[in-house]
Amino acid sequence: MTAPSENTAEYLQALSERPSAPLRTETFRQTRPSTVGPDAVEPPFPIFLSGAVQKGFGRGGKDLGCPTANLPDESITPMTSVCKPGVYFGYAQVYGLSEQEGKVHPMVMSLGWNPFYKNERLTAEIHIMHEFKSDFYGHDMQAVVLGYIRPELDYTSREALIEDINTDKRVALKSLSREAYMKFGVDPNPANGGFDQERPSL
Image (cartoon, rainbow, N blue to C red):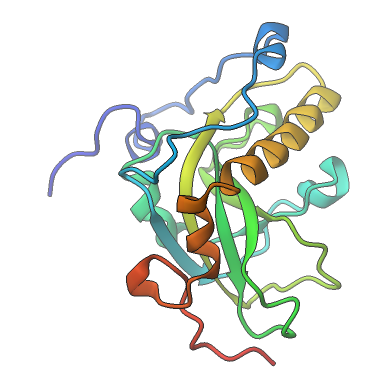
């Protein structure tokens, strides 16, 4: 078994101390691009993840207005082994919900330690850009990660973190609006890069 590449989340997780993250600066805020990534999806993307939705820290919805769904630790290895901590974008789908709720929706994903909250455990938290009527803990979820938005950062205030989260959402939607990315959300054939639509919704 080969050792994980340096700077990947898997490599950093194996270190004796939780890695530090740079502090978000005003310059970073002012220079953020509206679209990220190339016009075509490039390796290591797409990365497919799936698993039952777990209970997280409960802060996303309450503190940040951005509820998240957590995947089990073992299901995120395909990503942690090739990606560095940071914020990513793509699509996600939750199975076993109503037809509308169970559709494929755009998502943003945080991979890392959430330095503002000083987490000691590496997590993958997915915010699906859809207003769900209720939680879906225990439901199977599939996600496809298509690109990188920004590095994991630390913050001096919750307001600055919320501002960046809202920018992340806008950047994700703009980045996903390109044809090469849109197909991952609508093509029902997994062999063509889309989702497995064979799992029935209620």
